[in-house]
Length: 392
Ligand SMILES: [Zn+2]
Ligand SMILES: [Zn+2]
Image 1 (cartoon, rainbow, N blue to C red):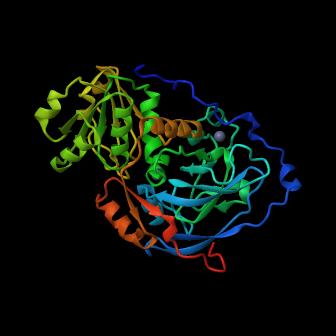
Image 2 (cartoon, helix red, strand yellow; image 1 turned 45 degrees about the vertical axis):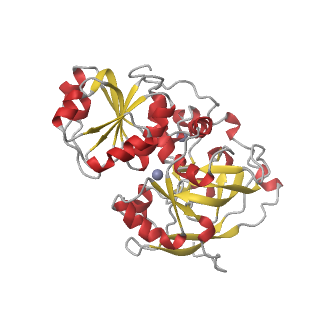
Image 3 (cartoon, rainbow, N blue to C red; image 1 turned 135 degrees about the vertical axis):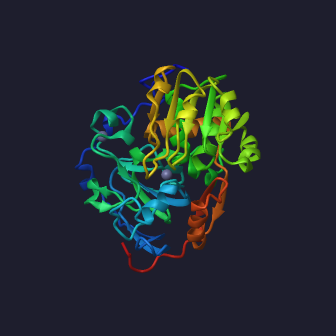
């Protein structure tokens, strides 16, 4: 590993190619066909829960890929967004950004995907494609703001509000579509598109390799992926948890050691033993005890976004060991493909519980209660047929 590395190793596949700019006239040369009505499940108000809806999906433009969705993972962000907990939300809103399906139609300029291909879509469906971040394959950090898969204004499509993957179909520009390896269970791949790449990206940024010691704080959707991915990279993995009840589950996932973070003696015994910590906890918590478990040049990446203030970080804890305190947001498109290919090579998928559309509200309540091992995935074949007229 290269501690504190400021720049990630080169991407295995070039980032958004500059061919990105397709001749706008191409759209005019071809018959765009017609859009379709898609069955969906979404929220019509912050407090009404989720209910059946019908979406109008656009006809594929030259660079578009139309996808028949098979599975969509349930992410905590979906709960926050659908309940309006992140402020100003337009309704109706169909959440879902862990999408796996098969290509049903492609636009005239699409050569890299053909109908029948199994593909995925993660947290974004567009970005400016011109800024330094986009050209570096870091579309998630687009200087002009990436376009989220749901609830975002889609400037290249008439400012329509994007609608996500709790749906039978979606239409996405080919540059934001990734290929799902054939040897992995497609339902269990879905959570890789958000939870997987969110944990893969900082591990890769830090160039984790055989023998490195990785700490994982929290054992939910993100944490369980961090354990599996770090193990597949050859790391020794130590899981920090507040709950004794989670010890067997952590060991079962492959953790080499589980440390009860409220046990002062156990934390003291872990002093200077860890190279990199992936912190997945979204509730406010004191990071200082974790910094003390890091070696010189170690780093702590925070992935959860607490809604309340965190206890202050003690600069001395960082200074005395040249520790980096960092954050990280999902991953770029090329990196998402690299993550899927890595998972195919190492047989890594998420641990999931498949749910029907009519179980979505119950699944949300169980997610909030922490009662899921470790990700719910919607089977979209259980959606009702679309209505004759679109709701949105
Ligand atoms: Zn997510
Ligand atoms: Zn950009």
